[in-house]
Picture 1 (spheres, helix red, strand yellow):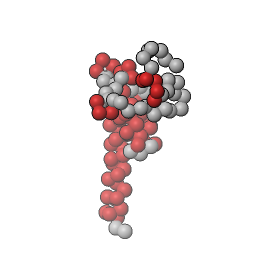
Picture 2 (cartoon, rainbow, N blue to C red; picture 1 turned 180 degrees about the vertical axis):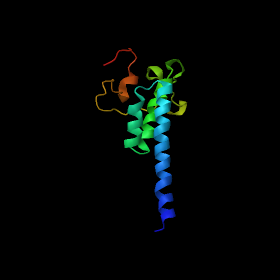
Picture 3 (tube, rainbow, N blue to C red; picture 1 turned 180 degrees about the horizontal axis):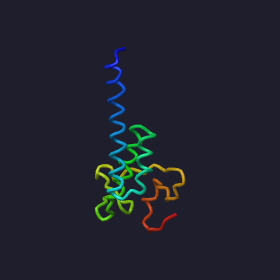
Picture 4 (cartoon, helix red, strand yellow; picture 1 turned 90 degrees about the horizontal axis):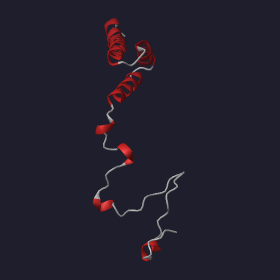
Length: 110
């Protein structure tokens, strides 16, 4: 393999990796993720994925609960799916929906 090709195949990814590490170090200091050396080390030791870990952690800094549409466990359900029965999950302590529950007019629950 030629030296130039080897330099390109190793040099370009290494330059990107070092660039992401240095960029993470300076950006972590600017946005307040302390210590920036920790985030640079994560980015350096876990190539590419470490940078995405940093980006996801950075995005949590700008969370504003007043603009969160899912705050308070509320979520929108399309009107065509409003009558669907929710599937139970582990640890689900909600009341089970019975088919004959709607037939009673006294309004009491079982």
